[in-house]
Each structure stands twice: as structure tokens, then as C-alpha cells.
Length: 167
Image 1 (tube, rainbow, N blue to C red):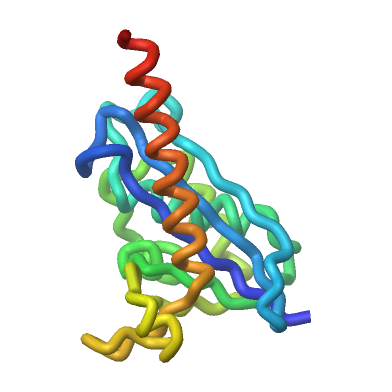
Image 2: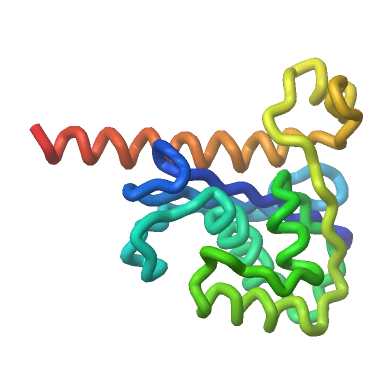
């Protein structure tokens, strides 16, 4: 069965964020059925850095998703981050990424059989119907939007909890 892994990440507040960030991935089969998904929040102390960047959360989402795939998985990873695409395929540049995440990335890509496709983030409804963004022709997917919405939901929830605890 052909499956596709969609990933996204973001910051809670500004980038870089002293609060942290959110990540999300989902696995979809060839018929477009959601098979599984996971998402979470990462705080600076969880990664050993003073702040969390968007590039870190984008990479973390991809690595968390790839980590649950079988060893010989040969599907497609879809990301809206060119930096993440480069890091999970060939780049040796990991500025601002903790060493443990760099090592995990390099380990996962050693025997990779999967491919990576860059998708356009934040598409309009018309773009989604068309399957690509009008402004630049980049592919878009409702599953990337799904991951983005999950990241935003977690960020809102995190901010609400912070606000309640400060009152």
C-alpha cells in the first residue's frame, strides 16, 4: 500500500519563541484515508535551547513522523518547509538544531527509500480544489492544512493554559 506522510510545525507566538512550538504529522493512504496522526508541543527546555524556531518544529514533525514508519517504508513525505526538505535529504547544515535531533535526522536518512515533495503552505480553498497554488503553481494538500490546523489548535490551547495560570 502506498502511503504519504504530511508534516508541519510552527511557533507559539513569535519566531523564535521563548514559549515553544507545535508539530504535527499525519499518514494518509493512496485513497486519501487518514491512517494515523500525532501532534504535540515542544518547549525550549525539551530541546535544550533558550527558544524554539519554526525550522526546528518543522524538522521535528518530519522526524517524529518518519520515526514511526517501518524501516523499508518507501512512501512520500510532504512538507511546506524547504529547509526541512533539505535537512531530511542531503544537507549537512543544522544551525539552531540540537545535536540529538541532527543525529536522529542523519540516522533516518541513511537507508531512506522515501522521497520528499515540497508543498505550498497556507493555500486558499480555490487552491485546494485546483491542487496547486495560483500564485506560484506549487502543489497543495488538505493534509498539509490538516497538520497546520492541528499546530494552530495546540498553540491556542497552550496560550489559554498560560493565560489561566497567570490569572
